[in-house]
Image 1: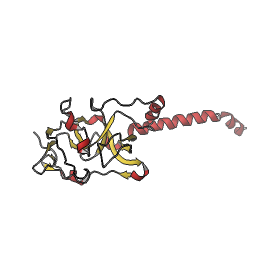
Image 2: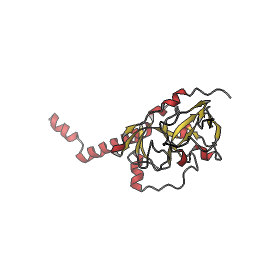
Image 3: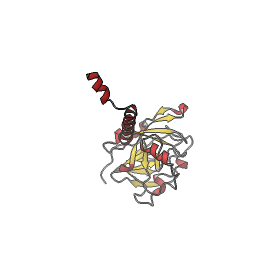
Length: 224
């Protein structure tokens, strides 16, 4: 008799399937919102670290406390006016984007050179970018025979903001080229989605990204 009642209380297969689908979608949304999210690289501005159509996974856990570190490659929302028109996704692509299965547009990927309070200058007598008076040794990630920057700048990064640059310095419209806009080229830290942790596609490009050692030598900013 008990077995008979248990069988009667069991949901039909289609209801169970629907419930499992809803739970799976809900879990995907939560994962995307708080843990990881997939993006694709649309341009050559981060050569050779990232190339066009690389699929990258951005981890958000390290951003929970709002801390962005120098040297990290990050994805951030367009602060306004950095991007031109972006392709409009289809309805199905929008749905996949919501659950983290389709790379979103309207974002940029660059390397953090300076954080809030930093004094970032181009360049010293040897053509190197300095942060808080210490020169960066960038050969680890810059393309061969590429100068750190041909565009001069002298910037004090506001608190809760970052100064970002593409690794492909001769082909990257980054913070250097938006100093006439609100923020003077800096990006609000709250617009940073997360840190690029790994390249997952194509297969021959799979790799984990690490923070370059040169940024460990940069001292904390001093008070103005």
